[in-house]
Image (tube, rainbow, N blue to C red; front, side, top):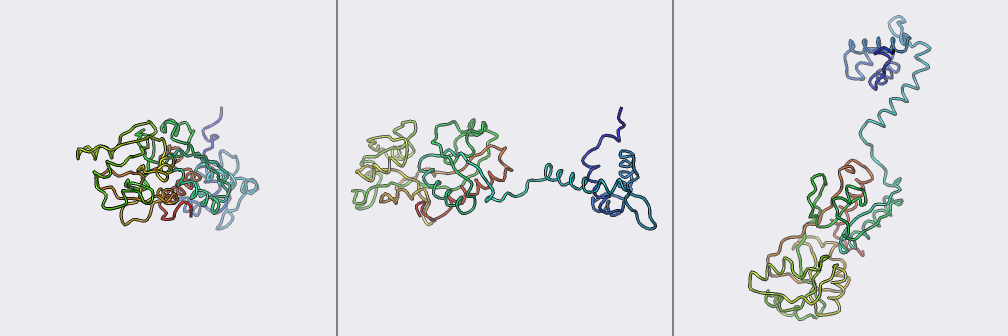
Length: 314
């Protein structure tokens, strides 16, 4: 049966490396922030375990034995491996990444993200590619199961383990084609309600926060069609008299990338004269990615893309 001293641990390997490097119990103790007495006890344990004195007195100093000299490089390599295995993660150079990240986002968010993410990947991480999925998976389980790496958009699930970071808060505005009747004269709640609208809902709903605000003034809007995505709704508004709602930056703030496609379609954005709830765009991920350096770069890239004032088509 092995004695207790025959069972090595990480601390013994680290102490051996310090002793063989410093050739001094006192200096090895200072290096490892312990006392000389404790280091002397550790040296005694190492001598019993390895059945070799390791360091012997030579005048005022200590010199290594042949066995110690043979072990010195191996001990240093073991300690380097321990630091790599058990130490905090070191930074990852994005240029060395070779990964495909899967994100889930609504079409408008995905359209705003893709150009910026590709631009940052080209500049910083050319080995990275992206897969953007529509909002078709239940985000909580999909994040937990690893089917998606990041959800970006209006985060409405509250799984306790999900990490969520709010990125930007926007407001809803009315988007219409140039020359639309609503562009002539002040926009009132009554005029907005009288116009025909295209609603956006993945679940096919005809009503939303705008209808609630209009109902408080005994008004009801006319919804001609419901579409599942903002991009299709904006394209329809650009070719008709339908009104489409799109998210935009608050007054005085830098333009949001989420309005870039509306601008590209030539739509005119009108302030809505009603109190509507703000729209918060955030990102959600599973905590197993919290310390992952590659995922950290992904989150940073999303954060920088959605906070930029540049149009996504720039």
